[in-house]
Length: 223
Image (cartoon, rainbow, N blue to C red; front, side, top):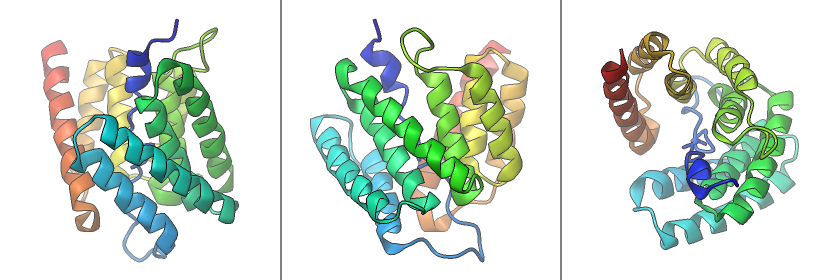
């Protein structure tokens, strides 16, 4: 049986950011986010890191997911819109009951796969990063589609494509920790902490770095 705790780990945190949830802020000099996509990003940041877990957070995340679906439908060829729709859908999977979680996770995978085909570099490799998180955190066959080999390949792609992508390095480190590759995880996580801060996403940046520090402590206990 697929337990709810397994899917709770899908909190990406992404942005899934990234993101489900989450990709890093846009690089200096790049085109600004579409206002609708920027709204999804800032709303996810606030819900993910600015309010306690519980029924109200879940309700608001589901409502944001409906908005994200609509934005993606209006912009089907926008990797940015699809990435945020995928991240928020992943977050909804993390909060859902076991009966709904797998369906949402599969839907997030399909959305992010399309985004990856459109532009794997968009939003600091947000699509391959978020896909990789799904592949290593959902159960494997016959229960679901988890695949650690795919996850590893996607993380290697993401960190190469977006060397300054905070989420790419953080989640890669978390993956390596889950694979008991503690020395490599330590190296990757310390690399993440050297990356420039993102003042335009201060809430996300602060909390993600705290998560990295916490994970480094756990890594230290294992080395």
